[in-house]
Length: 202
Length: 202
DNA sequence: GCCTTTTTGTATTATTTCGCATAAAATAAG
DNA sequence: CTTATTTTATGCGAAATAATACAAAAAGGC
Image (tube, protein in one colour):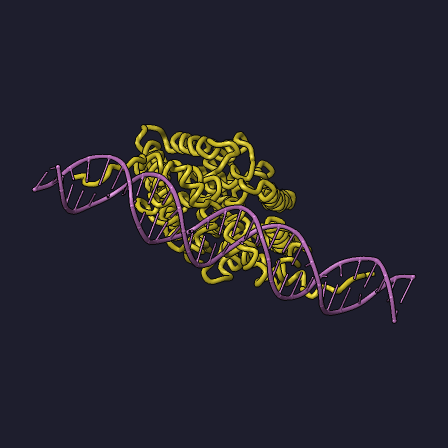
C-alpha cells in the first residue's frame, strides 16, 4: 500500500509549526498563509491533510495536551512526595510558559477561551482539557491520602481545582508580562497553602 | 463651545456595544463592520471618535475595568465580614460571567491574553488590571487583619493572588461550559480554604 | 447672515483572506 | 509499460476587511 505520491511534509513538524503560530497569535489572528509558511506546506496540501483552520487548531491543541499529559505523568510516577512533585511540575510548566520571547503562557488557557464561543468545538476541547487536569491532580492527591501523607478528610477534588486555578493564573500572568521569579514564588506559596489547608482541614 | 456638528451617537452606548462584541468574539475575530453595527456608527465616525480597532478594544477594556472596580468597592464598603464580602463579590462576578448565553466568562481574562502578544499595549492593560485586582484583594485582607479577623502573620499579598487565581479560573471555566452551580461551589470552597490557611497559617 | 468647526455618510481603494480548480509530479499495482 | 491513486504546486476568484477621501450636514461664533 501507500498508493499515490508520497507526502513531502513531516506531519509532526507541521503540527509543531502550526502550534507555535497559534500559541503566539491565537486562532482568529492566524491566517492560512502564515500557517502554510510555518507548516512548510502550501494551502491546498493543508486542506487536504488537515482540513480548515479550526481543524488545524484543534489538532495543535491535541498535540499540546499530549505533551502536557507526559509532563503530569512524570510528576506522578517519580517517587517524589506530593509537595515535591507539585513543585517540579509547576517549575516545568513555568519553563514552558516562558520558553518563548515574549513569554506566551499556556496555549490552551491563553488562546482557546477567546475562540471558544465562535468555535464551540474548541470550547468543548477546552472543557475536556480542564476536566482532564482536574482528574489528574485529584488522582495524585488521592494517592497522597492513601499513602498517609494527607488526612482522610482531605478533599481531592477541591484541592485539584485549586491547583489548576493556580496553574491557569500563572499561565495568564506569564503572558501578561509578570516575571518568572514572581510566578515561581506564587506557585510555591500556593501549593504550600493548598496542601496545608488540606492537612489541617476546615 | 461644542462648536461643530453635534455627535449623533451615544458614547456610553457605543462603548457598551463594542464591549459586548469583543466579549463574545475577542479582538482579532471582530471586524470593524460588525463594530459599526454594534456601535450604531459608521466606520469613518468610529475612526474619528475612537481610532483603530485596538484603541476601541482598549477603551472597552477600560470600561469593563471601571465596572469591576465599582463591584469591588461595593464588597469593600459594605459592613460585611471578609468571608461574606468575598462570597457576595464572587457571586456577583459569576452572575456577570453567566450573563449571556452562552456564558462568556470574563472579558479581560478570556479575550485579552490571546491578543496580548500581537498587541503589546493590550498586554500592558491586562497586566495592570491583574495588578489592580491583586491590590484591592490585598487591601481587603489587610483590613481584616487590622480588625482582628485574621492573625497578624497572615499574608495579604499571597491570599490576594490566590483569590484572583480562583476568580480567573472561574472565568475560564464559565466560558468553557461548566455549570454555574459547580462554579459557585468552587468559589465558596476556595474562599474558605484560602481564609482558613491564612487563619491557621503555615 | 456668513464663516468656522466638527461630525456624518457615501464611496473608493488596496490588501488580505479563504477555499478551490486544475494540471503536473510521483509512487504502487497490474 | 500502462493505469490508478495520491500529493504537490501554481494560480484563480470571490468575499471580506481596513483605512481613507471627499462632500454634505449641522451646529456655534461673530
